[in-house]
Every structure is written in C-alpha cells, then in structure tokens.
Image (cartoon, rainbow over all chains, first blue to last red; front, top):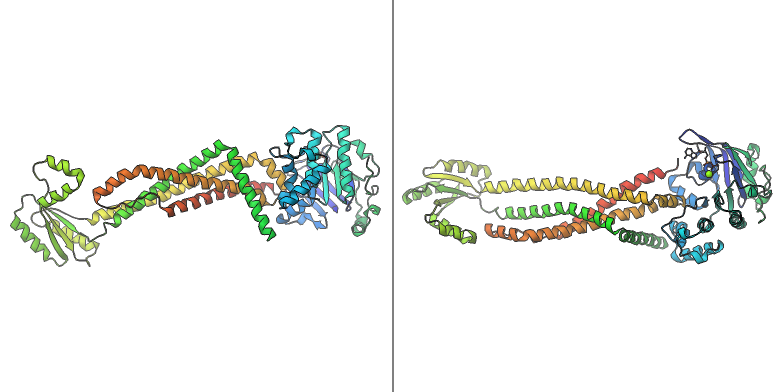
Length: 254
Length: 306
Ligand SMILES: Nc1ncnc2c1ncn2[C@@H]1O[C@H](COP(=O)(O)OP(=O)(O)O)[C@@H](O)[C@H]1O
Ligand SMILES: [Mg+2]
C-alpha cells in the first residue's frame, strides 16, 4: 500500500531530511514511525500525502507512483488518505459537525450521506453529543478526537497520524491509540508517528525508526522488494515475511 | 445528472456562504462596495452626459447655412441688391432675409431674454442674410463660400453654423475619449481594491485553504468562495454605482432641462440608459471576478508541492 524506494528529501534550505529511505507497508497493516525530534517523521508523512515532493527516489501509494503524479490527480490521491495532526488543524470558526463534514463536502457527497457519515464518525470517537459545539469549547483530547473523526469520515484507505498523542496525558493517549487499532481492524492501513515509548515497545506492531533522516529499523531490503510486491496481492498480508520488523498483524488492543 | 446536481449544490452552498460572510463583516464590505460604487459611477455619469451631447449635436445636422451679418446702417436697396447678387452664385441655393426687427422678435420668444430685451431701447441686432448652399456643396465648398461672402460690400461678418457642429463633434470626441481613459484608470484602481480585499480574506482564511488543500480539495473548490466574493463585491459595487449615478443625474436634470429649452432641442437625457446600466453591472461583476482570480491563483501556485 505504501512503498518508498530510495527516497531522499532535501529541503530548499539544503537540509537533508530523509536519506535514501526504503520500506513497504502492506495493505491493512499498522505501523509506528519513531525517531528523535527532527529525524524526519513529519517529512516522511508529508511525502505520502504529496504535500511535498521527494528529491530522489520513488513513492508508490495504492499502486500509484506519486512521484510522477499529475497536478490534477493530487486531490484524488489525498482523498485516499486521512490525516491526524498533533495540533489538530481544525477550523475554529466552524462547528464540530462542519469540521468533520469537510472532507465529504470537498469530495461532493450529498447532504444526506454527509449527515449520516459525520454522525457515524462522531459516534465512533464518542462525540456525538458535541456536533453543534465549536471546537474551541472542547478539551485537547476531545479536539484530537474531532480531528480523528474528520480523518476517517470518508473511509480512507490510509490513516496517517503525526504525533497524535503529543499533547495528551497517558489516559487520553491510550484512548486515542485504541481508536487507531480499531480503524486498523477495518482494513485501514495505519501509520502513526510517535515518540511515546509506551507504544513503541509493543512487539506486535512493526516499527519504522528514523535517525537523522535514515531508516534504521523497518528498512526494506532491495532483494526482497520484488517478493513484497507479490505478497501485497495475496489475501493475508499478515504473513508477509519481507520486512525486518515483526509481522504487521493487527495488533492487540491494549 | 447527479454530477450536475452536485455541481449546482456546491455553487449554491458557496454563494450563500459568501453572502453570509458579507453580512458577518458588514462595515468593511459596505465600505468596499461604496468605494467601488463611487468609482464606477463617474464613468457612468460622464457617458450618459456624452450621450446627451451627441443627441444634441444630431439635431443640428439639418441643412447647412451661412449667416451674413450686415452692417448696421445698410440701406434696404443695397440689401436687396446684395441678396440678388448672392442668389446668382452657382453654389447658392437660396437666400433668406431676416430683418433686425424679426431677429429681435425671435430673441424675445426665448423667455429668459424677454426682460433683457425690454430694458434696452434701441435694437442692437444687425440685419441678417441667411444663405443656404446647394446640397451637393461639401464642407470645403461651404468654407470657401463663407470666405467669399465675408468680403462682400456691406457685410460685417459671415459664418457658417457648421462651425458649431464641428466644435460640438470635437468636444464630444474629446469627452468620450476622456471618459474611456478615465474608465480604464478607474477600473484598474477597482481591480486593485478588490484584489486587496481578496488578499486580506485569503490571509484570514489561510489555515482553511491549507486544510482544504490537504483534504483533497481541488483548486477550483479552493478558489470558488474567493471568486464568488470578488464577483459579488463587483456586482454590488456596480449596483451602488447605478444608484449614485441615477441620483446625480436627477440632480442635473433641472439645469439640463433649462439648457434644452434655451436651445430649443431635446437633450435626450431621461436618466441612465438600461443598456448602459446592464453593461456596468456585467462589467463590474467581471472585474471583481478577474481581480479575485488573479489574486487567488497566485496563492494557489504557492500551495503546489515542492
Ligand atoms: N520546510 C522545511 N524547510 C527546511 N527544513 C525543514 C522543513 N521542514 C522540516 N525541516 C527540517 O527537516 C528535518 C526533519 O524535520 P521533520 O520531518 O519535521 O522531523 P520530525 O517530524 O521527525 O521532528 C528537521 O531538521 C527540520 O528542521
Ligand atoms: Mg514532526
């Protein structure tokens, strides 16, 4: 589902944020992306959504080489991906309902469909009673859940989260993490950037670790890349032996 | 069919959302629209006045004539002789005599001068011979004839009334040209004004633009509210201009009526022409849309992934 092949990213400032990163995340997998601050985690996620373009290398998302994507295809590509940000990125002049509805409005869903899906998403994050509230009146954890509802409301194939628990206490973090595992059970490919050691130690969830822009765990081996591509079409990605990390099976909920 | 519906629903959503934003920012919107209205009303008023002027000129395009003002104490036999002599000119069709008494009489017909005429005891007007050239005599022929007539015995002065028409035409051309140039300058100013309000709006909503871009909004979707804002500002600015222009023309209507009575012509100024009004509205709306398009396109190019 997500494949990086020797991807490097040098910012216009000359800084090398990623250096020859290769990995593969199969469809329906759940993985963590770890690394010190400044290691390149956000850069990697932004490359997946094509918010930025790689300097070198090839990125394949959902069988599409997005390094060569045409500008008019970018919106459709982004609609396959739900994003959760540490700072929520909500619109503070609109209600919770309108915030969650935004991806549906952007993709032109009907009003009835929109109402139904927004309520389903809010129900999942247990904020159904807050649909008319303004985001500013909610707590940090609640705002993060609004962000999650918005990320999943259009049933994306991929869910990315950039330090989603960064500002939350342990209990709230667990709640949020629990939600991601749940979405993963619905065959969503999930990648979460975090440096919260409590989750990274979970042996059942594969780990990509970045250090100074290099991938030090989870690196795909050149020679196995071909096998991986074949594996992806097989019905049980859990048995994918190609990555050096533990099997990307749907992890236990904590 | 479903796509068409979706398309219209999205447009309606944005349309009403934009109207909602206007009502949320009453003061700044009102100021912008008023500024647009004042700017656009100036060419509208001038164009209407220029139109009236050309209608005025049109009524003068009758038979060309040359007026010969005779010396004050010219005896009547001499006038007759002169009249006959000129009638015999090959270029002349007809000669008409207007005595000084008749001239004074014509003059008193115009109400405004009645009192003045009553106050003077001697008639200051000269006798006049009005010479009508033959129809096939062109403007140059008329000019030559006039020069010839000027040097006749007993003639104080001769002039052809085309002079006036030519001047009027020149003034009209000048005014029209001035109005066009002024319109262009004002339009540029208005584009900048609208572009600036759009620029501020973009800055206010930058996070919204970024988020919609991230969620897979197409450029058209991101642009749409701003294009609507520009177009609606332009439209309401045009509407405001029409109101201002109509008001100004009402204020001008009394003096203009007096003027047309004085010259005994219809000045054809019954207010704003509906075609001009429609043109103004379409033009101002388009102007607003273009200004917005120009501004938002620059912002969007900054969103392109690098
Ligand atoms: N837009 C940018 N321009 C220049 N350098 C950047 C930009 N964004 C990030 N960087 C640099 O790239 C490196 C990786 O950043 P980032 O991907 O945000 O790391 P992380 O999310 O792991 O903290 C950092 O050193 C950061 O300073
Ligand atoms: Mg980061």
